[in-house]
Structures are given as structure tokens and as C-alpha cells.
Length: 425
Image (cartoon, rainbow, N blue to C red; front, side, top):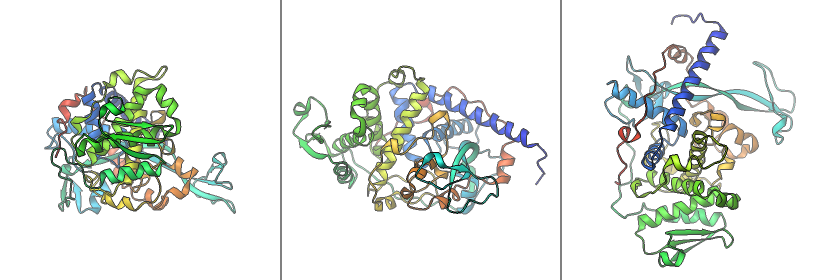
């Protein structure tokens, strides 16, 4: 391999430029989410790429659409996406001439502390530095870097086994979904009640009473509609139970969040997502005074994704396989004993407008970031160090080769053209 003769400053400057270009692409993608249909399609897509952050799913979506327009991939939508080393481990290789899709992955460093429960006590260790006697050592995210993934259509080799997927009839609910959602409601201290019709609960399909800690769902709906309604109420409980008064003050955003959580849960089970009604993004994104609409969309998407993934990990149901081929069958997650965490416990990587590929942190809980681990290391049930070694996105030679590739300009995104309307199985 040809030796890289660039200085450290030149490499840093080039990486910074690429990160800035990715952030610009991400901003343009978010700004292009205008209609209700745009948001529904984006979340349906994200539900199939659950091990990727919402921001990285948008980056993959945009770059794949460019590759399809240029004739480099046969299908308009990506199906299975993984890093260079992940494909090698699966017996496949990236075909010659296929450029990877840039995403943002974390850069980590070692930190040490004599008081691990004190978040201000952690100090960064220099390269090769050993911790002092009694210090606890962990890894910490200190930045982001460009990383590359490829769709399966850009690779060749052994066939990828297809995991079972739910097949539902019209009005049919996935097996076990109602019981699983009801269990989550009970774990949060709420009781679930059936109500005969909409008139008995003010014309709604379902309602959550915060003071009485009850959830009511209409009986006169089909099973699929009842599950969608219950998922909506679970979304409210997971996201808003700790501060329901603030949610009431921003009811438009709270309703979008709860409905979006329900949408991702439904999409992960192969249910018809066209039944969901969400206001125009351009309307609710501008409802927060003093906040940029792009930031509102990103923070909302991060909260929705964190809540939905936490709920999905608690369900012993057959779900559509994650589109990262190395991900285990999602049903394994049902053995977890921890309750669903709120979005406040699972900070999204889009804060400060920095998007990170969460899959490099923990494959068991993709939204479990280092900041959370430092506060509560017991939550990482599979071992944090092991998770950071499995990302397959840090191949040095690949990174040096790919950093030389020019950035492609992102076109104005027409979400309806990129993804066909979601439909039921």
C-alpha cells in the first residue's frame, strides 16, 4: 500500500472537512422532511435500520439514492448495510469500483477516575499512560470521524441467510405484541383498561390518565388498531411520564413523539404504517420558540428512536430483521430484565448537531452511549469493551483509502421518490 505522506495537520484538516460536509448533507436531508408522508417514510426506513442512528439512516438513504441514480446499485432502496470488515466476516467482499456510504462513527479515548460516580472526576489518559492505583478506567467518546458502509448489492460472496419476517393479514395484530406492551405499561405502574367506544374517552382511540395512572383503549377497534393505539400510549408513558406537565405545554410535539414511537414499533413488526396520521413536519418543527426547526426534528427523532428501540428490546415478538446483517435475531433481546428506559436516560447522538453511529457502542442496546455507561455502567449487559471492538468501522487502511475520495454533492431530496409508500404485509 502506498505510504501516506500527509502531515498530521493535513489529515486532521481533511477529516474535519469531510465531517463538515456530512453535517451539511444531514442538515439538507432533515430540511427536506416537510410532509407527514416524508416523516412516516423516514421512520419506517429507520425501523429497518435499528442499529444505526436516525442521522446515519438519513445519510445512508441519501447516498444510496445517488448511487442508484448513477447506476451503481440495482435497487432504489438499501436492504442490508455493513462495514468493510463486517462483510468480510460474513464471507463477502466489496466489489471493485463501489464507493462506500459515509456515516459518522465515534472516536474514543480512555478516561480514568478515582470516583466513578462523580461525572466531573474523569480525566483523559494520554497514549500509553497507565492509570493511578485505584482508578477505574473506561472508554469515552471524544469526537466523530467518517466511516464507510456498503449495501449488500455492492458486495459479492456467500449468500446472506434471510431471517423470518412477520406476515400479517389486514386487521391482524402480531402475536404477543398486545401482551408485551401491556407488560411495559404495568412495569411503569399504570393499569390497562378496555373502554367500549370513543364516546367514553372523549372521542379518542386511547387515553392515558397521569394522575390515576391508567390507560384506556377502545374495544370496538380491530386487533391491529388496538395494538397501534396501545403502542401510542406506551410511547407517552416512556417519554413523558417523568414530566407530563411539560409534555402538556408542548402537546403538539408530545403527540408527534408518541405517534412516531408507535409507528416505529408497528413498522418493525411489518404492520401497515399508512394508518398513522402525523402533522406536517414543517408545522410542528417550528413550534419550539428559539429553537432551529432542524434541531427540533433531529432531537425529536432521537427521542423517538431511543424510546422505540427500548420498547422493541422488551418485546418477545417476531420482528423484521435489522438491516445490519451481523445483528442477532431481535427476539434474543426479550430475555432482558431491565425496564424500558426513558429518552432522558439514553441521550441521542444528535445533540450539538453531531451524529454518531450508535452501533459501534453496543449491539445489545444500540442507543446506549458512553455518557450513559459512565453514569450507570451496570446497564451494559454485554460488556462495553467488547462492543467497541465489534463495529468493523475502524480499518486503518480502508480509512486512509476512503478519506481521499471526493464528497458527492447531495441533491434536493424528494422523499416520496426515494421510498415507495409503506404498505402492510
